[in-house]
Length: 229
Image 1 (spheres, rainbow, N blue to C red):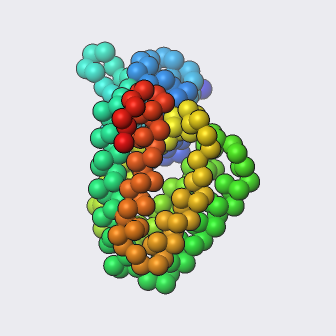
Image 2: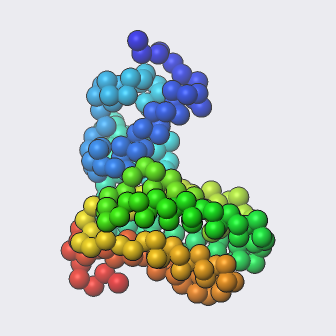
């Protein structure tokens, strides 16, 4: 039986928010698709009020759009949105890397090494697999979080996390259309080594290159641009 109401922040509200987010990121719910309440109610087994709250939160994250009387839609995938998110992420990640290198201590460095080790072990076990998995998504996020964990700004951390989540749909798409396997483990290793070596300029440059590669791959293989540098 469907619950008629749910206090937001409870298990049911949190679960449907997570499931909707994952279904949008993995394109189970297609870009531009109308999100019909009756269909979603059947799929996720929750009340209208719980769905509306979840969709409102996803709208704030940029994954859902609300168009007045027309209702909710999955946010479209566009070249402009991809480039906007990419540029914003580059600005934030470079600043957070810079601050972390200025503030970081031995515990911060140990956290980076541990996060890299977990991610590297998973990537080695995946071999030539191109498609991302929920386990990879989690460990990948934890590694990048570890790199900037000493930035010392809750506000920057919050903005950075929001953009990281919005970029996940594009990362997933990039993995699906990639022509050749991306040697992400090598990229992550050199980023880690630059950070641990205290090379601020190199660490920021490698971070920017790592972020922009996804956009460049999608510009070539989805948006069909030949000048997508």
